[in-house]
Length: 204
Image 1 (spheres, rainbow, N blue to C red):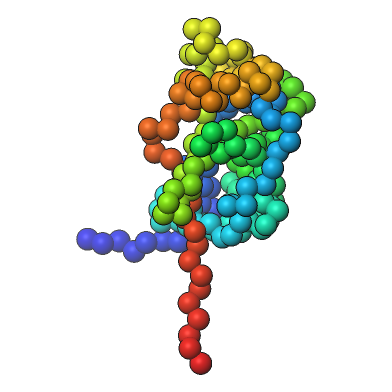
Image 2: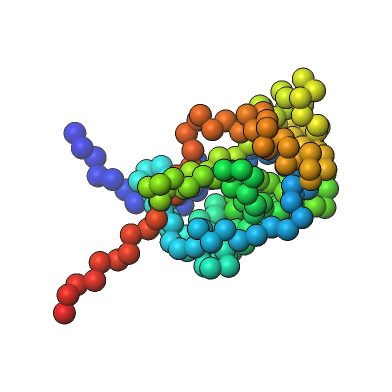
């Protein structure tokens, strides 16, 4: 027996987006950005569609300055973000301040800022494929904390499952370039963003 599908409730929408944006709750912060200046990646410009659970789709529009006014945040209202970052080798990163990360995941004020250095950032690793799709990963907090405990990463635990990676910008760049696997599990499923298709216009 097929039951009618009810519209997604506010709770269902939030849960779907939580699954989509769960990476920002990975709770791995970096003491500072690994570069002196964050830059706009021109390849980010355009409209991107990301799919969440229950068939929910969200589209974000990024302008030529890497600014978006409609990032699909966890609240019912879209979030304005500046999506700047840097490149190391073949990998690209977005660097979000703790306040930006809180906005993106709808966290309570202070949830991602308490105990962090003033210049701390959250880093989103992303790669653009030849098909135009963007895959993104967030650091794995357990993986990072285990590496800190083994002495393979400089850092400390801030609270349960919350790691702070420490070092100079050069040390952080070396970590990302040479020991990426201590932080990111790129073998697991990524968040996938696809170029949004332009609306079809009927011929006159």
